[in-house]
Image 1: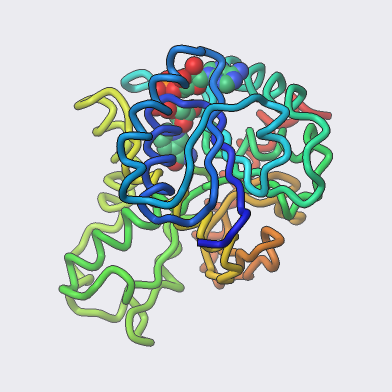
Image 2: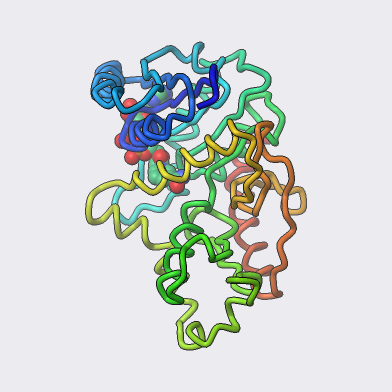
Length: 304
Ligand SMILES: NC(=O)c1ccc[n+]([C@@H]2O[C@H](COP(=O)([O-])OP(=O)(O)OC[C@H]3O[C@@H](n4cnc5c(N)ncnc54)[C@H](O)[C@@H]3O)[C@@H](O)[C@H]2O)c1
């Protein structure tokens, strides 16, 4: 644990509470401040989380938007979640207003704070938060396709019989239906993934559908997803606090496309330190461009 580091989690629903629990178990920060518009929810979550305090040195308490605005890392999960078969983009009307309200209520935000967007549609909300927060773009990040990439790596790892962390493969673009898999640059042990005989008979389009559809499947079965994203976010918080400079596919502003989408980036204590220009074949590039165009269309409606 890094002494004195404070993390705020805005939105104490399933995702916010599970992220808080993952942070608590990992003993990454000194303090977690939970904020929710519904008093009973946040009080209940804090009481419940305090029962796990004996396994951690991290203190959890409820707080105000103003206190959250002064934290080192501010995680935004506040917002409506997808109903079965609803797309993430369809959440924008409801979640734009919530984000606008949350950011205004936190002002003035600590100038060195990292804003980590999790609520959906995460790419569009990250773009909006970059405009509304007043923070430099590299400090306003979305969890993006980190979760989708983890799902992909798990799928490939089981196909090849290797550990997940031996698989270097990314889902890029939108954290949503137009995401793409960068098959051409994926590798394991320095060998191109597409050169593995085990991959020859794998239907790549089917895998892509499986990965982008996994959230829909979970939501259909149990109403919400939260464990995977909590694992992703707690590891991102660790990476920021410990300045680990891991390469992660995260929502960031891409100059070439004029919008926010996921690309591999180097993450450290100042936020995004570098965007890695990954090799894509022409088909992947065209799909990524299409993903960017559809994201930009929605962004332009909300922020000029
Ligand atoms: N990025 C990802 O990979 C990922 C994964 C899972 C879920 N999500 C998204 O996370 C969001 C939250 O999902 P959930 O399952 O926790 O939903 P939830 O309904 O359980 O919780 C949302 C919480 O936000 C609170 N809230 C609403 N307006 C607020 C405001 N102005 N200030 C503070 N709190 C406010 C609600 O009271 C509620 O407690 C959704 O948008 C969902 O789509 C993203």
